[in-house]
Image (tube, rainbow, N blue to C red):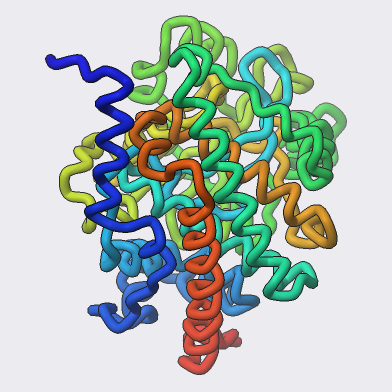
Length: 438
């Protein structure tokens, strides 16, 4: 295998400007849409729980930002029509302002990082920045900002990304892999998410999701019935879910297997989660360890192919899409859930992770005023770290260069795509698909 020195790799990045100029990233070629947006969304519903499809449409119709969250397949198709740098790294795949959040690291410390990887794939680095820029514009509008401020936030995200990538290009690779983002302390929305995560303990989840099975003192606990969002699962389906813990346990590292062996399953539920994932099969298993004061909640979440898979045929995803998600998460995060893994139930593939263990995310309202720009810079730095860990900072920095042309183009794209998202959202509302049925 030929080793390429840093100068050669930087030159490779610079050469990619001939393939697609930095200013060209502002272009949005929606005339190239081969399939209408609604048809793409409809196609993404195939294989989902039929009774929940209408709920997903209803959630997407709540606002342009909600539509954006549920329409990752639409943006994947749109991005695939644009000229690409071909500079690849691991993409979280659904980069938007609410897919960053707080969670507990294996050592118990709270960290803030990208935390949603359902669509993760290896792909062109700029796709991630374009999706994040559009989300910042939409979230900025929803939190009371005018378009100028929202655009400046998108540009601040791209500028921070570029500056951090240039710094990574000069750092030892081991330091890039464990780089700590100190900017987190400057953003109030991050503080709010960390405060939520501090309160979101396993015991809090025990009170939130379970109840005594009877009025008898000391009765065992079981999941609550909070239909349609949380429904107990019993019988053969519960047995199949619990059986899936067998192959999951086998793929864990030995020390994690040892820890999991101290817990026994108590109950199983079906849970509706997120916006983009509504309609997928999502199970929760309630386990107890050292008595009822030691609960563990595992989420077994169905993972179909990434929305980017049709457009990235050379990305070589894992055979199991749960494995694809887990490996993508480990590639980008500096700290990962110790119980992260994958399994299968029948012919469907699943990710396994802890549910609500010190997790907390921002709310759109948290981005009012100066908070939007401060948070945008955090987004840029975290994306840079994830891409720096899983890609080549020399190549990316070589392409971006030392000026602001790339950041300006990304910000312009963010505004244009936010405008198109509003049009697509309005089309969804007119279609009647989101009407509530009695």
